[in-house]
Length: 308
Image (cartoon, rainbow, N blue to C red; front, side, top):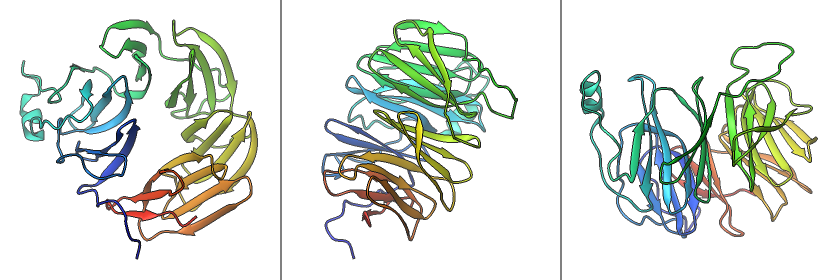
């Protein structure tokens, strides 16, 4: 049995977002739990908004998040200070408030806005946020919610149209620009200052609709819904593997060097000198790199030391 592991997450975890003082874990029902650098809780579980956070980033001393409930057709975007533990309204109150003047917002927010379209992607760096709303546009705001610019939604030059090809699956903010990746495997590089298109290209060698896209310097990891994973280095396919199903998360590890992947009931490494897969008892949802001791978080909230 693994010893010295962090305490179990007391809800169904969804995402882990690191920051300088530790990280925050989000849950499938809108839960938040702040952890310190040793992955121990810094307080109690809170539910500032009873909706799942679909996209989030931690920057400029705050958690910036986009909440979405497809059943209730509600979406919100807001900012919470780091460590906030306020509880908001219930989902029943959200439901009864539909079509009334009352509009519930996340508790403890610095600012919050209701959205009139589904949030597709969000990225942040410094005091700048960039995000996209489905068929509404591409936007940039400051972290205090002041608008910087807005642009029409990206359009893509596809020789063959396929369902959902134009959906955005990833948005990465770099130093002076950002990139958007579409489900069809196309990439646009745009200016952070203006949103103007600078470059468009195709993820060479990638087949099938893109489900996830991760980036670290010149290294990219592209995963499809069918379990195909491509490691691209400087735009070229470095490795390709077919896994047992869709992946949940991936992280670049400088110690390998290479990618660590939370797959479908398996843990995977794609490294410069080692590539291997090992089965897991539950579905891993996150790989947490904690110095030389990588940890795996499972969908039941338990932790385990990496098998690699």
